[in-house]
Amino acid sequence: MRMGVLDIGSNTGHLLIVDAYRGGPPLPAASFKEPLRLAEHLDADQAVTPHGIDRLVKYVLQAKAEAEDRGCSTVVAFATSAVRDAVNADAVLEAVREASGLEVAVLPGADEATLTFLAVRRWFGWSSGRLGVFDIGGGSLEIAVGADEHPDVAQSVPLGAGRLTREWLVPDRSRLDELRRHVRSTLAADAGSLLRGGAFDHAVATSKTFRSLARMCGAAPSSEGQYVRRSLRRKDLTPLIAELRVLSDDEIARMPGVSSDRAHQMVAGGIVAEAAMDLFDVDELEICPWALREGVLLQQLDALSIDR
Image (tube, rainbow, N blue to C red; front, side, top):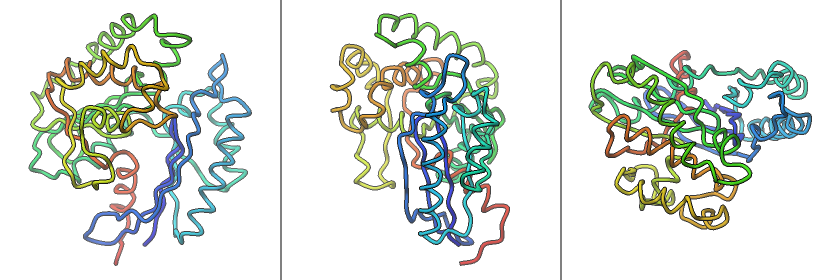
């Protein structure tokens, strides 16, 4: 069975197409993504602008055509914090539905964290014990902790790399120290509920920001495949952040693992990553190649009877 999952994120629209069958992992067949920067198309009232809606509709139509051309029997579409936080979210979803016929579900932040945790658990298995999972998105930071397939605690905190960049580092970086204090106080406010069950047996990070930070700190490139172990160590991250603070966006974009459309967010992303590792006393985060999209797919597959 060939399925597609369409992720409308704060930074990027990403269609992942997989082949799924009973008893095996979903196997990637194709991918189609576009740097929409949807969260940057919000007006002063936190409504997605007409231009932002037009860009989104255009991309969804292209993604739907790609899925049909690739033979997908179904496409599951969802949106995260950019649409979730927009005051005109209903109008945005209606515009997509009228143009494409696709129903886009808006995931609550806790569901994002829960589904990402599911993907990580399936990737690493039960031997990981008590998992702590961290995911820095464009609009929010998701954290989930637990020893089972579903987390004991799942939180979404408004500390996404894109959000913090827009709110704190534009037009310049003069508020970096203030941003650092804000991130740490925000994280510390809810840390107790995540730590109440004890330390993590295995601390894991997912998604693009963490992958980029790990790559800048010496992790293997994506060209070496998803089964190569990659990690982000706190002792490597701290000097990297000191370096990023003084580099221009263009200089950051030339570093390994950084795409030009995300370079301007890496300083904020690094500050969030370091704060999470410090406050939760994590020396190393292992990078998981599966994240929210795979979690959504796994949830769909669990609800279906799928044969080879």
